[in-house]
Image (cartoon, rainbow, N blue to C red; front, side, top):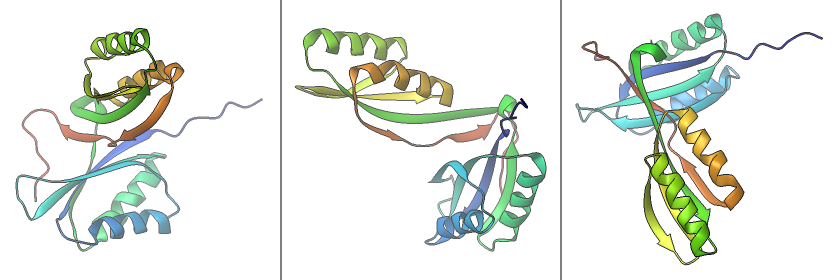
Length: 171
């Protein structure tokens, strides 16, 4: 039996024009190339007319290089680079609504939330909403820990990232 090799994760950071249709244009290029996006987050940067798009994808080096070449051809994409996870700060945020039918369950969920340095941001008679921030492994670990209580709802931002130190991705 042969062993399957898991495709490597890559983080692509793009500086793009902050205007309608750019996200569609980028996502459509991925679709045309039959390439799956693991996560994508977009937000305005220090210059209001620009946005940073952080895209997490899995694939081999050659495939990712092809995607980067195609991204650079898009008119609204100003700059594209890959981020080295070892030299980057990578974070994700999740809102997790957890069933808490009784006081004991609620206490246990609060203890786990504290251990993970999360915050309880909403309390209802039968549930709590926890905000948890960190790397993807931390978010995944918290969700798996919360799963036995009963996950009512889950929302994740996808990762966002910046390279460490003085270097910056600018136009």
